[in-house]
Amino acid sequence: MEIPESISKLTVEGAGDRFAITQQAPQLSIDDIVILLKQQLSLQNYKAFEEGLAYHKKDPKSEKNFIKNLFFLYNDVMVKSIQTSSISDDVKNDVVTAFISIVNNTMQSIDAIYTLTGTLNNNKNIIDVQKILYIILGYVIDTIKRNNNTSN
Image (cartoon, rainbow, N blue to C red; front, top):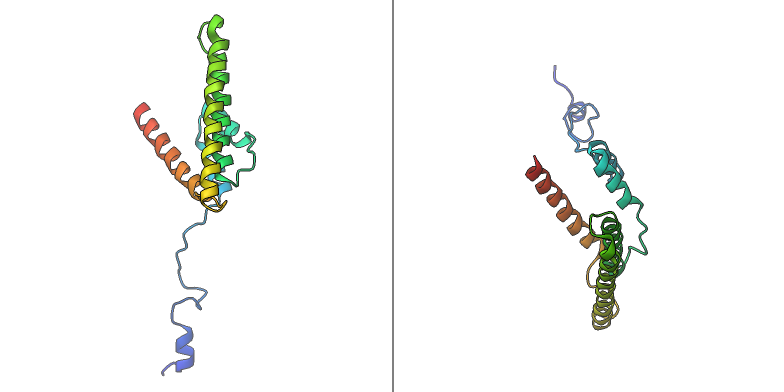
């Protein structure tokens, strides 16, 4: 006894067959990745990670502000580190002042170059913020991997 063609077509494995075995790659959201990272970090690294997540980001949708936010974060971390370091107390304030001055001058230079490039590029961003975010994310992940491999 042959199966009618209309029924036979229903039994072919494919997208229409709800019993067909299909492999789907799990879709991880950024939030899932953050949770996974938090679960894997040591307490010290977890605290640092949380500090980065909580750090105020001023208008991170423009690449200029994103880069400046990185400098502000770097500046704050360095100033705190200098203040708690073993640098002699009689020069510590001078070191902090010099560091802040250098970072502020760098940010002024960033403002100037973005004003120039923005003007030359009809006031459009030169770099897509999403693109630079993923470039930096790749750089950070690779650097963490290398540091972990060196310390092990």
